[in-house]
Amino acid sequence: VGVFYRPLEKIAAVIETYPRGIAGFRRYQELLATDPEIADAPDAVEAPALRGDIRFDHVSFEYDRDRPIIRDIDLTVKAGETIAFVGPSGAGKTTLLALLPRFYEPTSGRISIDGLDLPRMQLNSLRRQIGLVSQDVFLFGGTLRENIAYGRLGATDSEIRDAARQAQLDSMIDNLPDGLDTIVGERGVMLSGGQKQRVAIARAFLKNPPILILDEATSALDSQTEREIQSALDRLAVGRTTLIIAHRLGTIRNADRIVVMQEGRIAEVGTHQDLIARGGIYAGLAA
Ligand code: ATP
Image 1 (tube, helix red, strand yellow):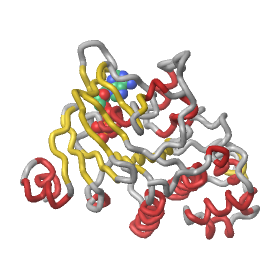
Image 2: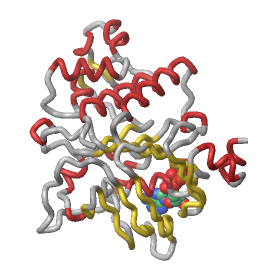
Image 3: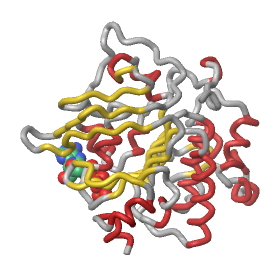
């Protein structure tokens, strides 16, 4: 442990939350509309630099009364592990992971990181340590530099360039009229789906969180782009606790464990090999 135990002062400005970063989740409009207004408890403390040992302790959740979406999830994730969540649409994968940055509170059960219950930590200090890379990247009308720097306000030019390089944005930047200062978005250069995802990856490199949530893209990218993005994501995951909402099985074979969800419950857990050998749901999907 301790590889990514960075001194607190090196971790982002306090302001960095998910202003619209809820954009990470597909239904963020909805989330914003129903803003759950989760407030810090009076005795909540600033989270220490987290290692990323996560525990879901018999967690259940429902959006609407008597319609359970997450049912009694009990799962321990060790710091640095990569866990992939698979299962049919509606199984609750996104909802489960939305509980971690506390977009919602469990209806029962508890979630802790490094032994600290989530509500014990000030929300900002928790969210600052969780990176989110999703298919719905929120880009605002501004420069590419500003859009990357959104990962960590106050980042230096060389940190921004380094993050761009790690996300393999550098060749694109070289081809833009004003490089990093090119205006992107509606009033500027429109980025492709793959380029937007790289901006999200660059933000995450810049944020350098111990915990990462990856919402895998469902939209098709050409296979070359897909390989490049996958390799950037693989590098991003190194040394972090990484939770992947997987839509394709091909990309998650190397996960430390695969959690198969069905109707809000964990139906199977194991490595790719374990689950294939078991001959259950995952084996059926992978066949
Ligand atoms: P997918 O692979 O399609 O993303 P998923 O496994 O991530 O599916 P969720 O998106 O977590 O599943 O959805 C689980 C269930 O919760 C679905 O029945 C969905 O309709 C419901 N649900 C999701 N968001 C809300 C909400 N804001 N209010 C009410 N119900 C919701």
